[in-house]
Image (tube, rainbow, N blue to C red):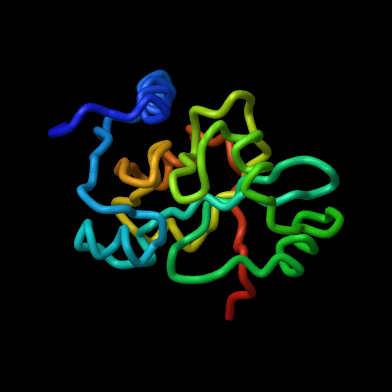
Length: 161
């Protein structure tokens, strides 16, 4: 790591290490707030970016780790999960649920575990890149590691076929 980690990323690094994820957090010189920015900075396909999106579902936060190649179809996901309406969380709700700002939300390192869904479209990539607690930090991991650190349920998040 060339630069010192931001405080939020240190908590993420500790949670990743505790879960046995060996990839090191990378500090990028520019923001990686969007999947396109992150993919450009890392030289990878946008689909290999594991976006961390926080929604509200039945009064609770729902973390969806989705491929940067598409947008979550909330009606489709709601039907798949058998839950009520899924709506985007506000910036304040994201910060409250994760302790992290939009654009830097990691799959782990939150104040409390979050119900999580992991997009099955991510499984096709050997290396995924996820935010690491700050808009300038990312961490590589495998799909299996992402499932493990989040305790997430694998699911399609857009209609397939």
